[in-house]
Length: 195
Image (tube, rainbow, N blue to C red; front, side):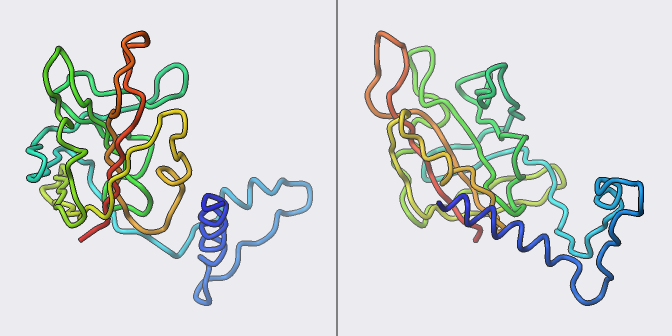
């Protein structure tokens, strides 16, 4: 339901981009398609450019790591960082500081040792999370809540739903370890908002 409201809000916001200072885009000329009119439309609304994230720092969890760019795997899921000591930013979504939920993923353990997000589950509301960017700027966030959810009930809409406000999601594994499947049964999700 929230995704519908978020999507509807996004559509309404985009529909109102013309404002009173710019004329509405003209409809398609006879014999042309609506795609041509859509291709020619230029919104008067702009958003601040945000540089690519390069580093993640979370003092309360002992995290100070470079960020890899993560894409999608062949099955459409988000790829995981290549090494246990690295976190990765999902480059198919917003950059930290842009409107919408920026997603950073890290392993909880690897090679029989704690990994970069091992202490993520211990974060609390108010803890500082800083994302450094390629242009030398930083995007500070504060943790608003930490949730542990079963992977089978992962709250996709809550984590990825479009939003016009910047936010940050940090995700790792948690809960019990299933030795048969060699996977954790839960995810730990940290929600954070800009400072």
